[in-house]
Image (tube, rainbow, N blue to C red; front, side, top):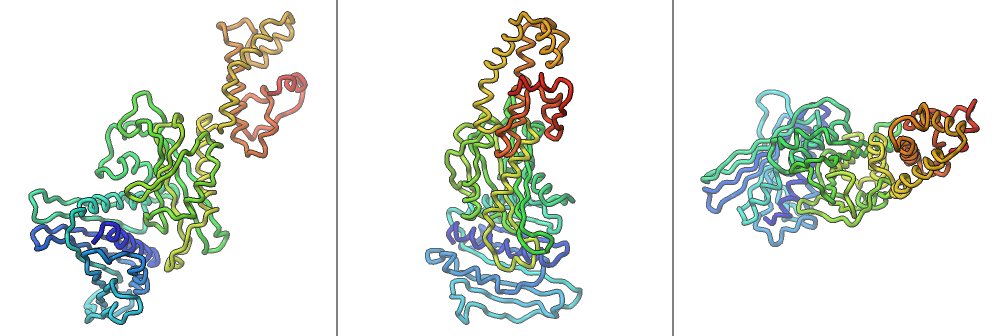
Length: 471
């Protein structure tokens, strides 16, 4: 089977397993086993995907259509073995599905003799298939491990995920096992926690975190955003966006080396997937320059992730973005739907605004950066006017506004430094406001705390003098 075809089948089967688990409404297990058997003739790869969710409706397998999955040149016979049962069923049903057959064909589905449940009340589904080993099978196995690293980013508390990768009958045989950590947080907080760990593990690297990067995790900064159209009902869609950045360190480690790109992980209904065109359009419509970024181009990497390339990357060493679009009600996942462009755009913007609000000066808009470049010259000019004045009363008033006992106190350049600090603070404060509110900038000496947006300007004694130095 061609690699792209194999990945499509694998992703589709994983997607429906997760949806069955979500619909069950209880704690479920998703187990995936990939075995590479070298001793068989020809060598085979066996894949098993099982879950303890509700029984399969079988309608979901219509998505595995030859019109969507090109099998014409693949060596795989297209045969799937399906075992499924519902919690109220008395039998365990067995089917054979040949996806090379048309959906309308009577030979596509073959019902095999059922197995009677001898004990217990349970539900679940298992899908198995085998494919002859090909030259690029190593790439697929590496891709599977990477796929599960992304799946673990979501940290869904209702689904225990396990992956077993085995190579049998070879001198280099090895077993790889991945499982997730259970964590009880809000959905967007779990996404943020998972994305941080994903970044510290270098994405598709081995399960252990890089020790050098782990020790530098305090450099990570996180922005979170949520948008929905659910209202007060149990229907509708939710989009969560998380952005993790690494600040530029004086001694960057292997991961935090300066990088001019940002990887975007995309999830739909709790499953990693390629980014839809509507989500891609949402990213294109964001005014990145409001956050000091200039998008140069975008492209898809070998794993199908979207990579954003910036014109310049001096604000931070690295950026990772995760976008998760899902239905609020799991029952609505029986049919896939396209993510809402406006919701995706809103969630990403809220995450960017969150980063901007919590990291003063880091995500200034391109316009504010240009203004800030003139701050040193402006502060030097204002300081020169104050220091060259022959009016001692005027100088004392200026010193008081700057919080100094006199203009001659402190080291040389203190007046200029204080003015520069206030100018930069006003620029950063004004940049945090919505664009329509930036026309009227606050006064330079309006209040003591320049970063408290909710502190109103209190007019009173000295207000007239303060307004003379409006910036």
